[in-house]
Amino acid sequence: MSRGSQNKSHARALWLALLAVPVLFVLCAELQARIDSDTRLMNQDKDELLLRSGWLLKKLSLGYEPLLADVYWTRAVQYYGTRARRPGATYESLWPLLDITTTLDPKLMIAYRFGAVFLSERPPVGPGRADLAVDLVKRGIAENPDEWRLYQDLGFLYSIHLKDYQKAADAYLEGSKNPHAQVWMKVMAARVAEAGNALETSRLIWIEVYSNSKDELVRRRATQHIHALDAALGLKRLNESSEDYWRKFGRFPTSMQELRDAGFVGGALQDPEGFPYVMGANGVPQLNPKSTIVLDSDQGPEKLR
Image (cartoon, rainbow, N blue to C red; front, side, top):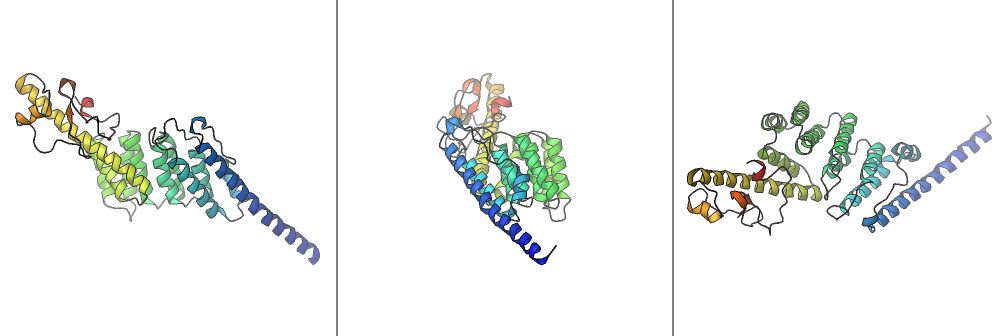
């Protein structure tokens, strides 16, 4: 091939490359507009991504994969944030957004770690897809085998959301083998394997999530879970006192004051947000109706009686 022909070929390749870049960003802009439009129409949340193939986007990116991954991660955060706790909100595009993000940049740790939190949260806060969250974290581990915190996330998902304590313990233990892992990973493996569904263990896990995250959304959700678990633990102790009352007097107490007067409880009988606990039917302590704390379905003394 002559030098002239080579120059023409190179010029054509350069022209095609320059043409592809703006086209790609136009597609991203259209995607953003579509998602924003759907956010304003929550009751008709039928959105679809313009391009669902991360592999195709990667081919078209011409070396801009990290930049595009940041764009898609930003959209994933905005997409989730505008829907969390909104009545009737759906999350069909959350997984495709995270899938595309991590395909474009397999090293983007924040997308694996926080994306898994978004996916696993139960309605109305999230889609309740802990199974997809596990898949996302496992993908992260495959791409980043030296990142021990991903094993922490995997153990968290198995224990908190899927209630598979053996797999949770295995994940924590595997992560603890990393020379850079914190000592508490091995302790967590033992606690999960031994305690299983214990509220104290769940609280410990959420405290670690809070302590090891700088994202305000994740920290806020962790705080809410910690408050719920503290309230559940408080109700559990009150329920035990109520049963002690029954064994002594042959009936359940009808108020917290009866428990206090009989010497079974003392101190401030209130939840983490300052609302006093109330006595329900059959001596089962409950949250104050004014409290904003929301217990999970497997929490509360009525599940333990």
